[in-house]
Image 1: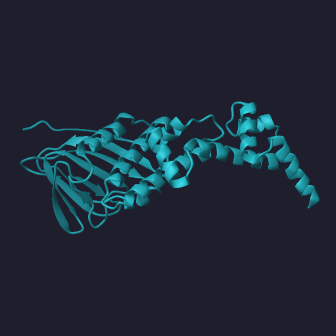
Image 2: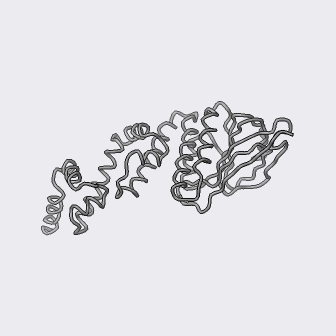
Image 3: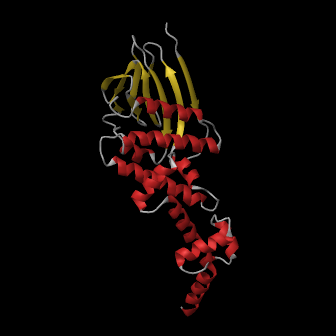
Length: 283
């Protein structure tokens, strides 16, 4: 009998609410190996690396081959099993989170047609990305971020190769929203655009193009603007010194903060606070 094997990893506590990896693995099945009938409580993508098998869902059975990819939707009964002559080998990733439905809506996966055949994304690209999710696995917060970033990239590949040309805009919007979310929680630290891009799961140049397309500004400009907006709020609502506010919004240099603030607002932080207080006294 041909060699069979399975390796898998299941995460512990889910640290991400927008999207998180539930499990990830790779299996070379024995002839006729079957899962189900049953349901999962999460999404699960299987990419066929070799051989073939059968996927039964919605009362229909589909014969799938190397290069094809199928997905399990939560709470939908499925059954899938390996071919008796050429049993399949596949890699998979299970995931959940609030972002999952909208992301999958921008791919060619649907509940009525829950598989993509080899004419879709290049199989080597999918196999590599699934392997990366497994490689960065772990239960630490850092590992959870790395796994989620790699998962976003995998899903972005499916979006990129979706049939509709509108998917290009969708994927850029997704990149920008994810980056904005990271910035909104991390702006008070000296984060870099490289770190933002790594969190999103794309290169800095790809992130730059997405921001230019969606917001008509660069990620660096957006980060600076966001920090200045937060600084304005602190200048109005607190009695913190200008230096303390600079550090609170992620500027390591008080001088650089003052220059950036004046460039955007046309006045120094101290003058901005003074003018705001004068306005309050008049009213």
